[in-house]
Amino acid sequence: MRLEPIKNPSLARSVLPPTIALGATVVIASLLAMAAGANPFSVFGLILRGAFGSQFALLETLNRATPLIFTGLAAAVAFRAKFWNIGAEAQLYAGALLTVMLGTGVLPWPSFALLPTLVVFSILAGAFVLLIPALLKTRFGVDEVVTTLLFNFIFLLFISMLLEGPLKDPMGMGWPKSARLIDEARLPRLVDGLRLHWGFGLAILSAFVIWIIQTRSTLGYEMRAVGLNKQAAAFAGIPVNLVLVKTALLSGGLAALAGFSEVAGVKASLTLDLSPGFGYTGIIVAMLALLHPLGVIVAALFVAGIFVGADSMSRAAGVPTYLADIMLATALLLMVLAIMLTRFRVVRD
Image 1: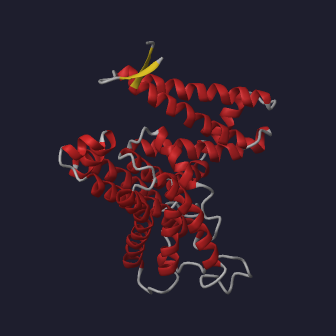
Image 2: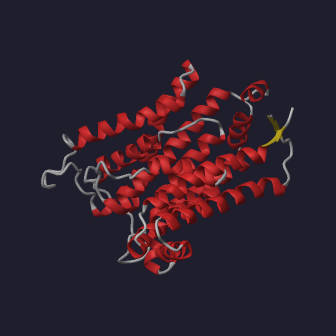
Image 3: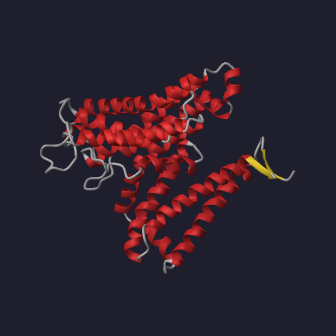
């Protein structure tokens, strides 16, 4: 048996395998809920109500989805050009670091000047972090999967050193965290009294900007061409290495915005537990979205809804929250298989 490429897959061929993958995920999760002694219909109902059943639940889901949109876009942009960025965690913390360094009083500016400055410097920080693996790949052929993954651990250790040293808040009761942002560096709330902030609006805007870049710009065409076939793209005159570097800069900047939004919108200070794995979960979001920028929004809401709803479901039904992790892992594995089946058919020799 072998895999044979499908030149022009039909609409049914493109839609049916991902749909079956999501359905199979629901079936597997149902079986696990039954094994835990719960009614699967009750479990899914509790997840839906916990994620979308009230204004508080809905806004909390949108808030949880905000960093996932940024990291999902970062992965989608890089993967489209076959640049495997696994280091969104490091780029996220780079954006958070610059936000704290400049937003705790170093620049005593009003919000309308300070917030755009923090956004720009966060993007530059994330872009610089991913620039190093990009140059290692384009100049020396070093595998970016290894370098970007290792950068996550290196950068977390670097952040830990800073939080135990020069960035440690002297008023933090000994806890390893930075000083709090000044009020002018905080993102305003969309709804008073709730956590949803304008970082969500920035995430939505970023998704539309990336969609326009990918579908209406020369860079977007070059990224797709390099992702489809590097040799053919080089033969057509496209500077492959330069495109990969540009892709890396864009991807790293998007991931850094997740760090900016979490610090400026939610936490107000930098800690080692700022991200519970947003960078890695962004890969799941990108794959569920089939690398489409607008699909990233939907996929991020789906993933955030599962996490937020699982917390409520666990308290009400007594089912472990690990069910949400299993659902996402299953969805990712089946979606990868589904994507393969949309582009290849299995034939017998």
